[in-house]
Length: 58
Ligand SMILES: [Zn+2]
Image (cartoon, rainbow, N blue to C red; front, side, top):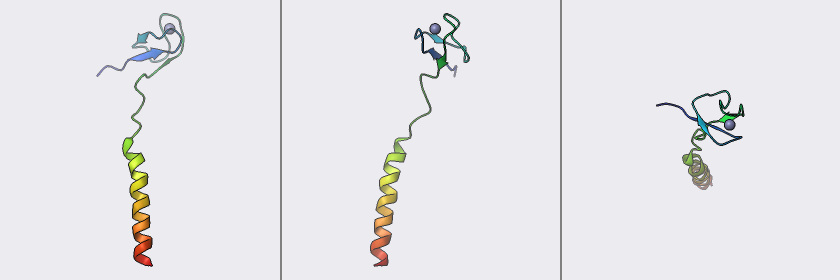
């Protein structure tokens, strides 16, 4: 899959990962690494686990 970058100056998409060929502006990956939604639930999971453990130890 081809990685597209997006210029933060003119908002054009480019294949250039270093700078925008149109304006020389900085480019960034418009699809940043996934925020893992699992992490959010992982917190609850760990929390629940901790509570369960605490209950067990009581
Ligand atoms: Zn640009």
